[in-house]
Image (tube, rainbow, N blue to C red; front, side, top):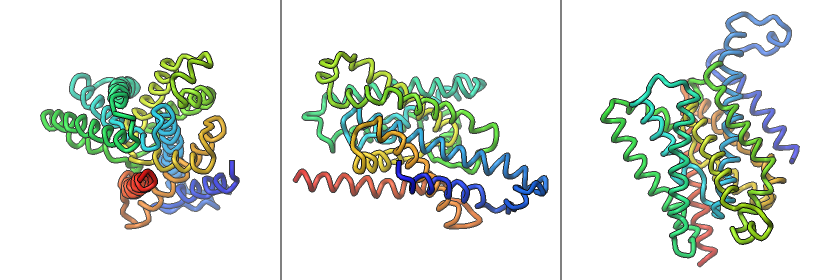
Amino acid sequence: MPAGIVLALIALSGASILVGVGQIDIAAVLAGRADPDSLRLLLVSRIPRTFAIILSGMAIAVAAVIMQMLFRNRFIEPTTSGTVEAASLGLVVVAILAPGLPILAKMITAASVALVATFLFLRLVERIPARSSLLVPLAGLMLGGVIQAVTVFLALRFDLLQSVATWTNGDFSGVLRGRYELLWVGFALAAAAYFIADRFTVAGMGESFATNLGLDHRRIVATGLVIVSLVTSASVVTVGTVPFLGLIVANLGSLLMGDNLRRTLPWIAVCGAVFLLACDLAGRLIRYPYEIPVGTVVGVLGSAIFLMLLLRREARLG
């Protein structure tokens, strides 16, 4: 892994801890002379927020690259396949039917709905002629739009629009100690994906190729989609939706290091954390002391890069 990426992760993590309206004297903290308020701000807010950004960035990037490999399309990730919208729908259903469920149960429910939607998208992709690289993400965006319309309708009917707005726009400003630990589940799943990365690589070469090597292609695909659904749901439940992050980072990793997931997955995960840290810092500094949600910052950058990738691919094919 390039040393520059690791140094960038360390530097941006330090900046994330230091930047904010409340001032923290790091020298005093290290010397053990920090006042109680500064120490509480550091331990309850700044450090948990930084951990949440790193964990989210890593897990979302890994989930995206798994989807791209399994669907064999560079423009697929949870926000371009209906997975994120389905997770939000699952949370709305839980809020209507069983609002008192523990947060882990809410995540599992959201993941179940997301998994169903992702398998539906997989079946939809199989019916697209020649599996056009441009039609596949557009079909995913349309599916996501339909699911989001159902979500908004239910939210409007049961007075949950404010909650939906929280789930559909990534924001780390409310992250505190005790409110982000679910992201460790997503990180653990992303780490588990590394140990079966070779199988995802083989599955990405097609069902016939995987079967000839003695692998159960359907089981590998199902495992990958379960990981993607759980990671997506953990992120949506905790910090909301961060659009296009995985699309950018996964494409960058593939461009620079190829498609061998065993080699590229750690690098892609760190790049996801670095990119999300940089976007979060930008959102905190552009209108300081006010804050722009990181989902908005990533969405603006990500949509522009997404369009560039689409147009570049279309020009190459033309």
